[in-house]
Image (tube, rainbow, N blue to C red):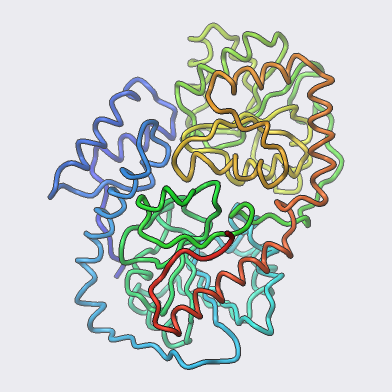
Length: 461
């Protein structure tokens, strides 16, 4: 059995509309969500939906997660009591880490994390994967080699999976999914490990009773934001997001081969369609209008492409200036990405993996930081690569920064040269230093647990 409430029809409709970029009812979504949150005994609203909803605060995101989690914890309470999982907290040679995910395959999370997993100090840490996806391939093979043990729990119930994790003596269980698609948060709610951590896959709180810590950094979650999170902050010194230097960066294809015109400035955004909003699309249309010959290069979105072309026409822009890039294997995508001149961020759900991919490919990204975790990720990455000047304080400045770079080839070239110079030495791509810092957090968590201390803020001062 897998435990959890289902979203209401209205929330499913909002989610489907976002994926298709059907924006006729866009403005009414936030009031509907707030109304649903205000109903004390109403059906829970899926927390992931709030991450991309403009105007929703981090406190509202927490309220949603608490409501969602409370319903599930109530359902699982008898099962959790019957499992009676007690912990052996005696000192041991290696701390045993368990990573829980269904993304141990050719997935964005795996591409971000694999080098950090490979860099773990195996003399101090025993690392295990608890996987619930069946996708094989080169990345899966590489990941299997990165772990001391790779356990497939896809056929197990939540209770059976929790029993296995507990029986394996996992000290720190690290959830890489949160409330994203396909997650099995029900396993975490059974509390099979003495310490549980929310990391990388979900940019927000999971609510009381699930995880003790969230791995983060001081840019995405400043100390003042702690009331919006049930977890204690485990701060990394730079960006919370890992990204190594091993991803291949081959010579780019020709513009024609990538479906781009021979001339003209190339704005790009490879985020999924649900992150796009009418406001952001208005801004992008204004940039295209002010930059003759420029194109906007987007990730292929079969369900949304027709609507996006119509939206662009409705803003007076030739829809042919939208170019949709088909899905490619990671190495090929990174190669073609070098053809872009400037990446444009979305809000309130930023570019995450797509931002670090752009920076690795040598493409600057302009962002405007908000107040929630998902709205500050691109800013965190830019801080860690040494380009804070691309973090705009508001959307007027975002527009002006992007426009100046498109109109001034020399300035754009200088910025790209700075990025290229920073890339070999900047913290963002230093996976060895990143992993050492991450391991220090895990050791601090474990020391506190052995000492009987409650979770508290740990990490970089």
